[in-house]
Amino acid sequence: MAIILEGLTSCPICGSTDLSKPYTATSGAFFDEGDELWRYCDAPLHLDCLEHWPHRERFSRGYLDLLRAEAKQGNGVLLAEAPLWLLRCGPAKPEATPYYVEVHLADWPIQLYSRWEQWTDYSANTYREGLAGAALKAADAAMAEVRRLAPDMDALRALRQRMLLISH
Image 1 (cartoon, rainbow, N blue to C red):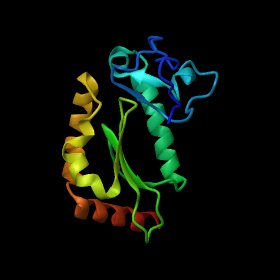
Image 2 (cartoon, one colour):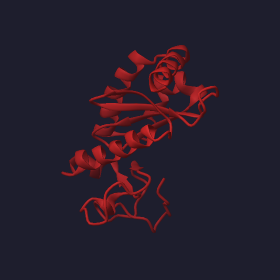
Image 3 (cartoon, rainbow, N blue to C red):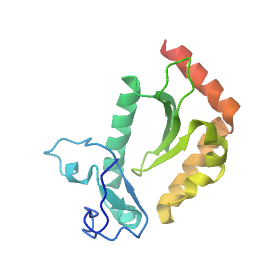
Image 4 (tube, rainbow, N blue to C red):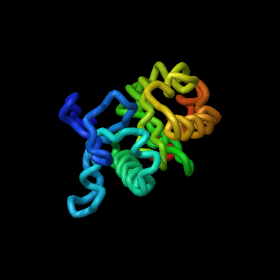
């Protein structure tokens, strides 16, 4: 995750260091330095700035592509993907319990992160914390779909087992 220092780190979209407004941040650089979007990687991005930012979808898709590639390289398990989101868990050997579950939104550079054992409560409502406006609406839409697929721990475990069998 981006290193964020209150009063020093700014949103590269608006330039403000005011981080009292809801924001998200990505981790790592997923565009080449020559790409115009490189400077937005690994930085805090205000949700209201992102809402109307013309590069949001391309930026978000770049982040999603990185996460998908990481899962293919063994960093977590890609559990499912749909047009609005990507669901993965990890890290853990197949015989071990994963540490986390993540839902990544396709059109917003937002990671909804839960500890594995807290998934049921998190997916029911806690994921909404820190979100606002259109970002919250996008998260609600994605999580409604994800909950149909993995509404509880039993379904999440079964989904992981199925994906582990497919990948081997």
